[in-house]
Length: 99
Image 1 (cartoon, rainbow, N blue to C red):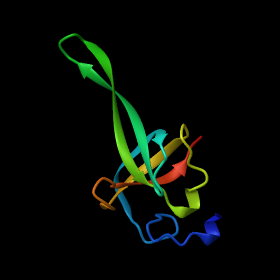
Image 2 (cartoon, rainbow, N blue to C red):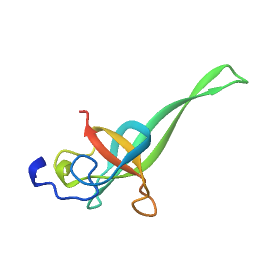
Image 3 (spheres, rainbow, N blue to C red):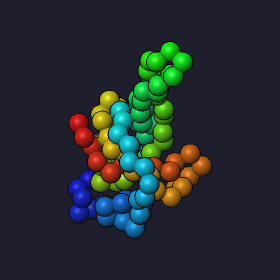
Image 4 (spheres, rainbow, N blue to C red):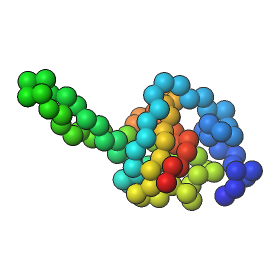
């Protein structure tokens, strides 16, 4: 689907959805749902007692607009922006495919 044909009202570029707050980058781990993906975000956390860092990760559900449906695949790196709650688990939307 091209950007001209995007009629998703939950699209931040072509619809009426406003983004605010956090902007995160991560790797798509699951894309089995129709318009939802699971993005894994790696992070480092400092452990003060041992003066070292530990690896952690977080999984976030995000909405995929119609104009990006064919481009977002498992393993691709994406940028997600925070928005209002779209469902029980979704509060982020994909805004850009980085790789």
